[in-house]
Length: 584
Image (tube, rainbow, N blue to C red; front, side, top):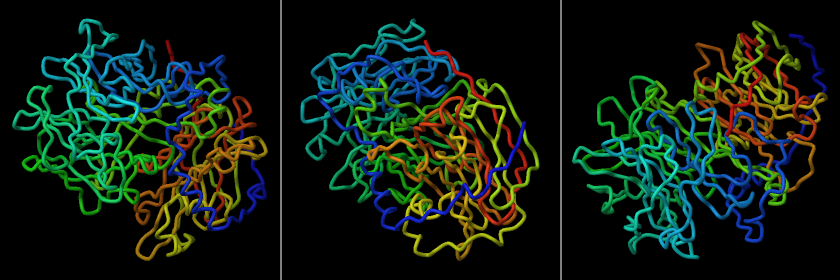
C-alpha cells in the first residue's frame, strides 16, 4: 500500500454563525417525513440510474421503499417484508413487499405479500410485525387504513401454504380487523403492532404506537387465541411531550452474554428494551428498564430517558427500525430504514428509486447495562475482497494520508486509534450542555483544529478534497469526566447545488472511559451514497446519506487524518473492497 501526505492547509478553518446550527438541528423535524405527491405516486421509473445506488445494502430494483415491516426467520429462510411503492419512486400505493434470503446478504425478490384489497385496508397496508405461533405457524399483524382520513385498525394475515419454503402467498381472513380503536384513542395515531409475546398467564401481548395530548404511548393489548384482543387498562409505558410513537419495539436482553432472546423469554438475568420511532423528529430512541410482568408495566431505569434527550439506536439517517430473534444463530437482529437526503421528489423520479435498508445489525446489552451495542452481522464479511492492512502509523498535527489498494466507494474499514495523553483535550463549553451532539459537531467540525482530535476518516472524498464526508472523534474535558464526540459530517459531501438537500453534521456522544485505556475504534461501511459508522465497537452508530458529484465509483478516495495537536497512533487499520451480493 502506498501512503502519501496531504497538506494540512487543505483543512482550512470554517466559521459558522451559532444560530445556523440551531436551524440545522430543527431540520430534523421534517427531513424524513412521508410527503404526499398525488401526481407523482404512480410515475413508474423509465430507467434506473446507478450513480448513487448502493452495492451491498438492501434495496429493490426500483421505486420507493420505507419501513422494514416484519423480518423473521422461518424454516431455514430469512424473510424481509417492507413498505414499497410498486408504481413509483415517491411514497404512495404502499404494499408489503417481500424478499427472502438464506444469509441476510443475498436476496430473492418475490411478489408483494400484502396489498390493499379489503375494506379493512382499502386505503393502506402499513407497518406491523411477525410472530411464530405454537406448532410453528407464522402470522403477520399489520395496520390497515380504512378511510381517506387515515383511520387505522389492526389486521392479520397468514400463509396460504406452509409447505412453500418462501411463503409466497398470504391470506387476509374475513374476520379482520382484529383490533379497532376505542373512543379514547386517536384513530389516526394508532399503528405498527409489535411482535407478540406470551406471559406466564398464557395470554399473548402486543403493543401499538399511539399518542394522547402529545403523550407518546405504547398501548397494550392481550389475547388468549390471537384473534380476540382486549386493551389493557393502562399502557405498557407512556411519556409526556414525546409526540406520536411509531414502530414500537419491545424485547428482552440478557445481562449475562451477547445472545439474543425470544420475545416470550421469561428467565432470569434480563432487562427489557422499549424502542420508539418518534414521529416529531423521525429518529429512533430507546430506553432500558424492567418489565413488571404482574402489573404489565415497563419501568425505564433511572438513567434511561424517554424522548429526544434519550439514547438513539443511530444518530443519523435511520428510522422505523424493527428487530427479530434469530433462533438459527441465537441472536437479536435489528433492521432500519435510511431514506434519501436529496429531498426533492424530482430527484427520486429521475433516479427511479428511493430508500435503502441499513445493514442488519446484531444487538445486545453493553456490560454496563446502560446502553445497547450494535454491530453489522457477521455474514457481511463474506463480501470482503481485496484487503490492505496498516500497523503503528503515527499521525501528527495536520497529517493526512490516503488509503489505497481498495475500492474507496464500496468498502469496509476497521481502524483502532490510540494516544498517549488526555492533557490536550479541549474544554467542553458549558453552553453546549443543552445542545444536541450534532450541534456541537457543527460548531467543532473536522476542519477546526483541536487538541485531542478531530481525527478519523475522510470518506467518499474527491482527489483534492473539494468534497468528502469526514467521520471522526473529538475528545473534550468536562467538569468531572471526558466527553467523546463521534461525528459524521455531510456538509462538504457534495459539490451539487441543491438548497433542499439535507447535509447535516450528524453526531453522538460515546460512553467510554479513556483514563485507563486511551484508545478509540471506528468501523465505517462505505457504499456509494451511504456511510454507516460504528464507534467504540458499536456503542455509538451514525448513518449518513450523501451524494458526491466528483467522488463517484473509481474517482472516490479514502483518507485518514488528524487535525489535533495530540499525536495519534493508528494501531491497526484493516480495509476491504466490498463485493456486490446476489439479488434475484
